[in-house]
Length: 177
Length: 246
Image (cartoon, rainbow over all chains, first blue to last red; front, side, top):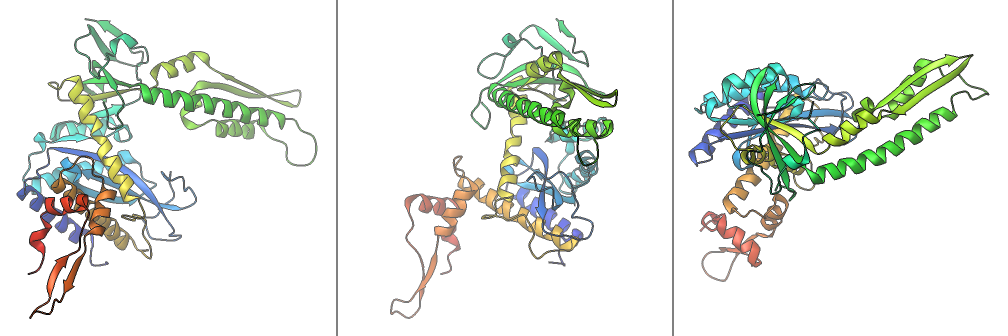
C-alpha cells in the first residue's frame, strides 16, 4: 500500500477519468462535499487530528475527506486532509486541482457546473470559481430572508413571475418591480 | 419534489453575494421547517432546564470553589447549542457578593429565526436557469450525501482505516475505498435501475456464483449457479455472461 503514493494515485485517477470519458461518462456537473471519519490512531503523523466529528466521536482523531463526484455519482477527485483544517481553506486549494484535472483530461472548465454548500462559501473561493467554471449553485443560509411572504412560494415546487424582486442585504430590503 | 420526496417551493431572487452578482432562489421546504421547529422547541426546553440547574448552584454554600462571573458565562454559553446562541440575551454580575444571572429569550430574534426556518438561499451565475432548474441542480447534492453514507457503511466499504497508521497508507486506503465506490456506481450506471441501491446491488453480486463442474466429459465446465429473477436481471444487464471463461 505504501507504493500507492500521491503521484501514483494521481496517475490512476487520471487514467480512470480518461477511460470514463472514452466510454461516454463525460462530466458536466461536479458536486463537492466534505466529511470526516474517526480513527483509532492515537499518535499518527499529520493526517489524524482532533476536530468536529460528524460521527460525534470527539474523543478520537479524525481524518477529513473531500469528495468530488461527477454525473452518475462517479467519483472524480478525492482529497484526504487533517480534520482540523477548515473546509473553506481546503476548497480553495481543491478548486485549483479540479481545474488542473479538467485541463489534463481535456474538458473546458467553462462547461462545468460545480455545486457545493455553504461550508465552502467565501468571497475568495467564489471569486476563484467564477472565473474558471460555471459557478456553482451554492446554498447560503446567512441572511436568509425570513419575511418572504408564504404566498410567494407556490405549490408544486416552482413559481413563475410573482412580481417580487428580492435584493439580498443585511436588512433584506424587498423591492417591488 | 426533492430526493426525500418532499415538496420544495421556490422564490426567485437576485442579489450580490460574496462580491458577485448572482441570480438565485429562496427555497422553502416545509418538512425541513417542521423538523427544525420541533428541534428548536425541544432544545429550548432543554436549554432552560440547564440554565435553571446552573441558577440553583449559583450561590450555594459549602465546600468547593465558588463560581466566578467568567466561569458562569462559560457555563451559560456551553448550555446553549451553537446555532441558538444568538437567540438569547444573558449577562452575569456580582451584586453584594452574590452572583446574579440575567437570562432571557430574545423574542424578536426568535420570531426572525422561526420565519427563516426551512428557507435557504441558492445562487448561481447561470442567469438563464429557471427556479426549478436551480433547485433541482442544487438538490443533486443529495447524491454525494448518499455516497458518503455508503463510504461509512462498515458492511460495505469501511472508510475507517484498520492497521493503517502512516499518512501515505491512510491516503492509499481512502483512495481504494473511493475506487470501490466508483466501481459500485459504475455498475449501477450499467444496470440503470433507479430503485437499485448500492447495498442491494452488493447483495445481488454476492448471489452470483460461478462453479467449475466436471460432468464426466473431457473437460470441466464453468457453470453459473441458479439465481433469483432480480439477480438474473442484474446479471444480464451488466453483461457478465460474456466474461465467463469458456
